[in-house]
Length: 212
Image 1 (spheres, rainbow, N blue to C red):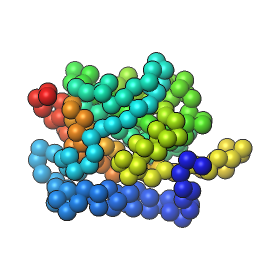
Image 2 (tube, one colour):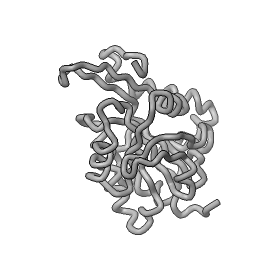
Image 3 (cartoon, helix red, strand yellow):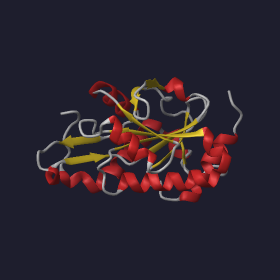
Image 4 (cartoon, rainbow, N blue to C red):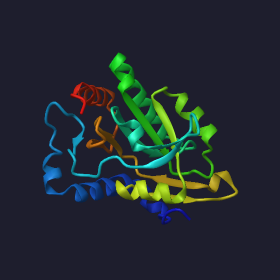
């Protein structure tokens, strides 16, 4: 078992619980920063959480990559799985729409889709899944320890209840997305990434910030 199995009764409250946990991690200063202020429209955390750090396998080429491979780009980090019926495809669709609004700026943004269900999500499946949305999406897959490290780093809850019956195979995960600047520093997060215009606005702002 890769993570503590959560009761089904927690499913509806998982997003709220995890956002609260993240806000506790950020602290009172971070909470004050959550007040929507221009130029940002998502939740501002501004380095109150750890910088981007991981070692995972990239689906498109099978290479082992680290956070250093994405330095110089704005990074959106999302946890999910390819069999997800609603949250994951909706979020990726919204991110794809936001990227399309950026035009040429989109080339400086990478969406990292980290599977929490690596037993079913092969590299080939992950690659085809991400490519169906946007070439800017990199599917990433890790070992049990690599996934646990990354999820713990950002207080992301996930659980997998395997079953031979696909209808009984249960996966739950936090839907928060994390946004990092070109230097790998965390800048923004969103528990409800459904406003395409807000996503496009903030990603565009980050792309325009000076490179380190």
